Length: 432
Image 1 (cartoon, helix red, strand yellow):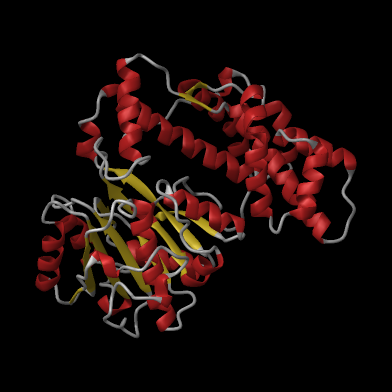
Image 2 (cartoon, one colour):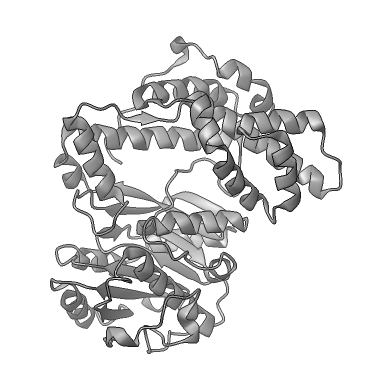
């Protein structure tokens, strides 16, 4: 099924929180059975968009049975393409009539021709269409034109939403052939970063646990695999109108409103690892930066393990103090002082911020902004190899004693000075 929605760029509405109040991108009504609206921003993806759409066409449920095509639709917005991306998408739709595919082609003015604006228009449109059906828990699912979703991507996303999540970040793996084409240094940096961030996510699950995001989990919340319910998208204010890292900005907006976010290993996609990207600030730019660092023999530096542990422990304590305050208990000055020190902020500032913040998510964001300079002075960055080593030192006893809830409070000082001989062998990082 195809809906070709080409209009002049001048007819597009100005950016707003939700474009449902003006002209829609897609005029064809959604099918009543539609539970998921998949959005795909595309710009010069003639080599990849067919693979992207093929993966979305052949979706199965978690038992391996074909997923009914009426349960989801796909909206492709091909913007400012100088290749045949839009034509390929339209031809694909004609060849696959069972796929509910809407192809929209635009040439946007320079002021709007960036991924943040394009993804926002798509997600706002998906929200509008789900609201037409009255599906508050309908799912807006974002991927990219250089990405192949797993065959059960939609079903796995729905599984997490049905389990209580408001939003889901999928595991994003880079294409093996693209990784092989990277310089050895860039490839090593990428794989080490993935290992480092997986370890940080695991440490967070022990020291600052989230009941809606328990182990096993990962660390990614990016546009190649990012889903959110319509009601939570609206509650978070929609996709923030930023030019770069719009996916991270949406994640932060969701955190501000205490959304139940799940970093699911069941939800998987494979994306390109090219060094010439379509958006500033994305993976391609980071890979290019690592390539340059290798040429200049610069080390890859990250936040040290001890800093992460202290921060996570302080976050956990702050949640406890926040809940006590909500329950009407007075805040203990000593506890507030210790927590403020662990967070890298002034105690009196923290007390004021707690009394004025609308949510715990807002408070955490304010703390991040307040402590940045002090935190970096207190905890200088270290080589990623050292940080990985130290994280494994912290994690080994936590893994062994994970059934003992007191480990989170009693073992932290001891873990912070864990000895090197506690470190198990590093895992082989063959894919990321």
